[in-house]
Amino acid sequence: MQNAGMAALGLNWRYLAFEVDPRNLGHAIAGARSMNYVGLNLTVPHKLLAVEMVDELDSSARTWGAVNTIRFEGRNGVGEWRPLSEFKDAPENVRSHGFNTDADAIVRALTEDLKLTLQGSRVLLLGAGGAGRTAALKLAAEGVNELWLVNRTVSKAEAVAAEIRKLWPAVNLKLGYPKGSVDLVLNATSLGLKPGDGVPFQAADFSLRQTSAVYDMIYRPAETALLQEAGAAGCRVANGLSMLLYQGAKALEIWTGKIAPIEIMRQALQKHVYGQ
Image 1: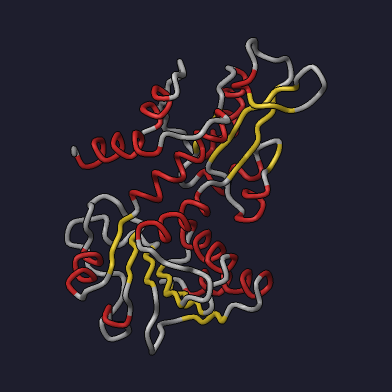
Image 2: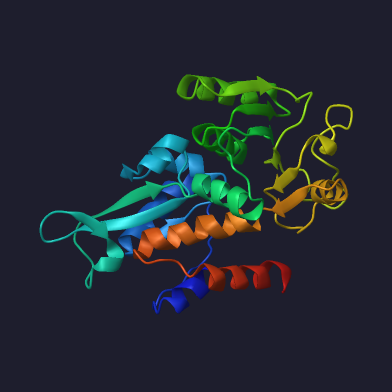
């Protein structure tokens, strides 16, 4: 996806994947900075750890408490910090600047894929871990009217609920399952990744006939048991591939200052993930 986007923009860049032990994350970021990398993407479990490791935090990273994108910046002739992509030669002073592109990607995916209006909506969110926490905070910031949080470890859901009540007290937030209808069910758990996984809730607690739309953050397999059952129940459905696309496209824009070629990146992503 990123390499296709970079090629379309005419950049002589290469996007590579590296496995880094969390204990070595600080060294990895420092090494990339020393080698004049333009930037980095981080995935779990590095997103939370990196908040304390970068030199500067963008408002997105401060708000959502996680860093999934790092841009390396140098000082220009007038002392301004600018992206390394703007320098012909490597600057003497370089810093790491952390961003979060996940939260905006969630909203874009929900509004474009499922044609949802989040403001004033009713949402059931399954999972309150890293991805679930970011989703919950972003949904609250978007002005959902009612938000139900469900997590296997209740204390995690309670911690997220406390954050939301402090920052967005107008949101009607509840722990557990709704009795009536909701506009969206959003799965942020890992249940569905493995063959044989069922839906991430108990039938005694909730029915998919209580909702009109279901989004599963899992994108491989393309259709989880949740999405299969939701489709059979007449719901509008979408998986997490678009969220992956949009967060990556935003990262590319942060590094380059150019508009990301979304459709080219989408085609490359679908080919890589699904062989289409």
